[in-house]
View 1 (cartoon, one colour):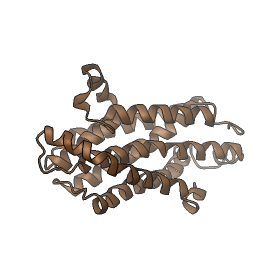
View 2 (cartoon, rainbow, N blue to C red; view 1 turned 45 degrees about the horizontal axis):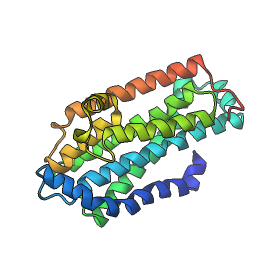
View 3 (cartoon, rainbow, N blue to C red; view 1 turned 120 degrees about the vertical axis):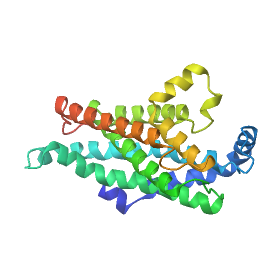
View 4 (cartoon, helix red, strand yellow; view 1 turned 60 degrees about the horizontal axis):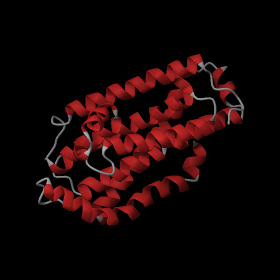
Length: 244
């Protein structure tokens, strides 16, 4: 993970791609929002959060690769035989991964506020809290995948597949109210849905912390579930040296 901080080229790309894609999506998003009655919207209220969430899922692969690199270089076993407990080891590695995830989301939002006039009419504090909790959720989603898979290649495949599925189902590319009924119900189990619906309230409906309280509670519950399942996975299937 320290190498990722020293050579942040992947993170920079994950920030730039949403910025490059956004202008091509803004006109259609603005038209959709006008139909929904948001006459002051410019489209960035839908496009920016959607792309930020989508590409934050792609960054989960960096977390996965880092854990399996520890096994490949035989440092994971040395960590486990030290006096440091397994939860402490995971927490230490998760903190840096979490910071990277959060900074990526913040960078996309701030650049978009300058370039595309992304300016929520609600509480910026509520937006910040949403990004903070969602970043934690994504971090432990990546760690969960590591804990239950036997190789980096399989974990990365799952990460990309589930990431695109969860981002799409959550409303990254189109509003969830345009989905069939079964898909809208399935989205209730998707952390991306609760994050994006919270950001929509903040961006378009003058949302504050009180208005998105349910979204935040559900995100915290999902994050906690990811943490517990990841710890269970490492207990039942220790990461082996040489897994790659």
